[in-house]
Image 1 (cartoon, rainbow over the protein chains, first blue to last red):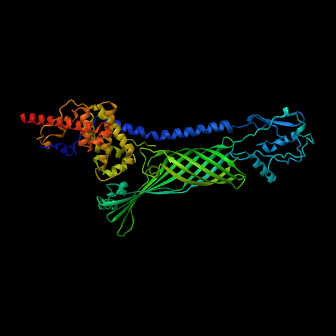
Image 2 (image 1 turned 45 degrees about the horizontal axis):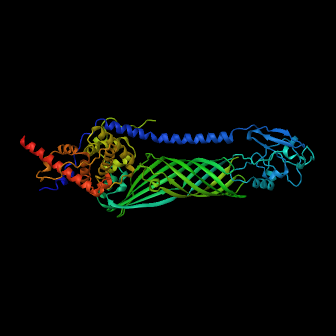
Image 3 (image 1 turned 30 degrees about the horizontal axis):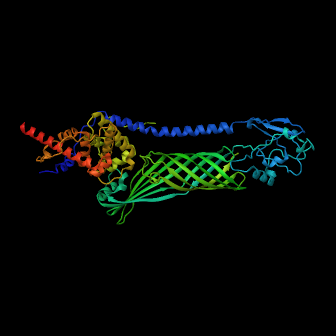
Length: 408
Length: 198
């Protein structure tokens, strides 16, 4: 009795083929091409999102303002200056408020009042905005330290208005309290983050997995190594590295503490597959370059005289812009390393990540600061991810450092 | 910029220098149009046979194969080469998974138990029967029988694994398999008998 006749079935069907349904290839081809179009679409969505965010930020905070302030006289002979574009009335010359004044505009000489001696002549010029996290009093105190740097008119006793009565002569109800105001600034950031290296898998198997990228029909050393290495016990080491990445960003202040940062980030990745089989070692090195567009919110939670602490985080869209695959072979018995194949064709890929960092910033010049920023990045897993650092790690630590230059 | 499009005709690398599986993986991974066409040409026939063992409707087979090929092309980065034949085995697993998904989606997996379980003595020789005939016999089995039978015989799954995969009891899997085998044995005998009369 042949109870195990079903065991013969797999062998019977080993080479059995059926005609594929008509139109299957057309359907597959259409599917592949429609999925291929997704990458640029995602890129344009990201770009459109960035552009929209930038436009909103510009409209709300950076749109052009009228250069001419309206001047009105208030009882007691003091001038009040209204700057309509920021919808804030600045009663600039109430002495007790000088230290909390975030910003003043250039004031025509003819309306300048006199300030008592106990309130030293201090002014902030147009070029000294309050950046997110900066304390206006710190800027004021620095302005005191270097009065020669201040531009515009100082409020001095030499004012043509003469010695007028001081603030206490003004009925309180007629002078509006100065409010803290904020002028958004823009910073340029240049930063780099350290390398991250990871030796991932050691796989024992057969054949030369590192020859994956060599052409089967290649002649010469490639074919020779493939023949020698095929079906031999092998050990394969996979190594994934992200080399130092470089970033250039623009940071636009939204409020005193909050700012929006975007720009470009170039991330070089390196994947190395080394296989030893028989008497050969074959190595495939894949270099990929990703260009990233981050959209990060930065919150400054403490700001001292020079030192500042902040956190920053948000999404980043990255896409591959260049790649190179190089396969080399080396006989273990000795002999020179031979390049089997080298290709520069782009291995297309795109991914999203979420970054979260904490930073320490130290102002070394009036407009320039150095910063160190440790953080973590989490890469969204993808089904079609190529074998590289991003697919080997769902999260990675990074340490960034750089220089921020405040433009205005 | 000239767009690289997948070729419509069957003239591809498949008919010229046929690459081995490793090379094919590299080509598909880099979304090379010729490579994708070559991959399709090489495995479409085999995978159609695999899919046809699970699904009976021609439209279901086509839909499932289309989705399977797209999954393979998208997920080729996950494939790890483990020797010649591993790519075909990997592709076959994807087709099986997609076929099971289609069966579940259509609510076809009903496990009937109204057919005889007793199997007669199997005194036939399988190699004498064309595979196409056996395939048709398998396809004529009820969906539940057929699915369990295919998973057990062709995918080498244990009843425990089948039970976990289909969300049924281990005993149900075993009984479905024995009923499927008994039914199939009867059909094979009937076929042989018919052939002998002719």
